[in-house]
Length: 222
Image (tube, rainbow, N blue to C red; front, side, top):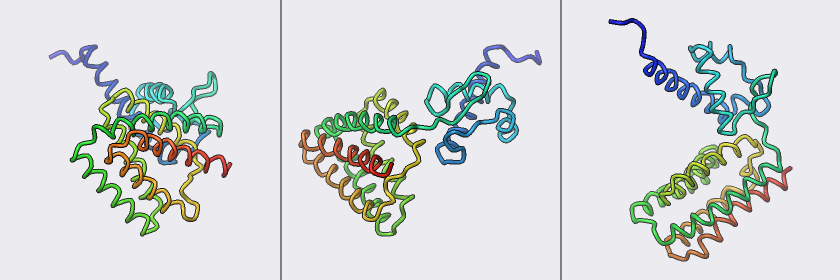
């Protein structure tokens, strides 16, 4: 048997490994292990992840395309630092997208999906009662992403996920204020009520207003 791998197989193996590496680095970025502005060291990451530098470089390219890092010639790769102005733009774009989602789901949310969202809202209410901001934050992200998924628009979902990842680099969390969690939970319940009532105008408006309220909290804390 020829010990040399076929070029196509080698390419597939390399791309697959790069994807795994990209996901590992992305998770470290989104969790805050690599903070905005941090330089990512190719050799250090290769050693940590047990891979050669090739998959690391390919992962950096993928992360650059995803908007999570920036590559500076002769300087290296850095975790992106999202400015307040950029964050505000993302909030505005999210508001427009989520208004569309609310309008669309008001006429197409299935009974199964309603049960799923009801369960998520129940968990959010429990997180508020437990004053567990971290759990609430994850449920909040899940609530909105699932609504976008339920539209069945894969391109919309891909764009939405990219925006959320970029926004996560903006580390000024908005749910730490006193009373913010109960208010946020009520806002989500109101959105869901409007969607299942079939009122497209109200559902869309509430979703847009919800995102704009988050934007305003961000601006107020800047």
